[in-house]
Image (cartoon, rainbow, N blue to C red; front, side, top):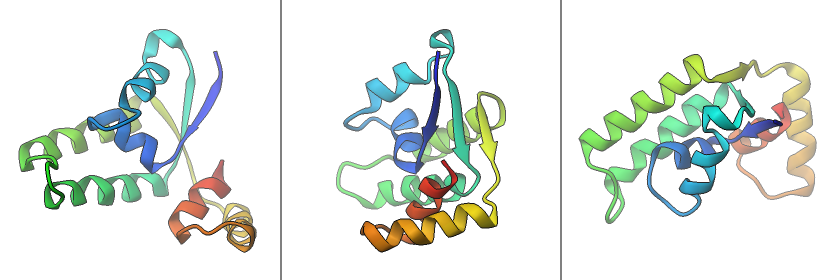
Length: 113
């Protein structure tokens, strides 16, 4: 049993068939008993990533998107621990961007870890 931090990419992999989905689904399986931690901002970032999939070739249908979105919110409401993004997390994110090429929201997710 471990504490695992999921970023938006992993959150999407949990609910949408793509490379890595099987592994993430196994890690988040309740019987494995890992504590799953998600930064609150990850909900919006994950929703944005899912929303882009119907526009991609071979992406999710509108119904699959709705189902995946409900799945993500359901897990976040019951199975995951949500952590607030505090000022110190943002400051860590700023430092992270100095050494790594990342989008702001991705850096904030990592700063919250």
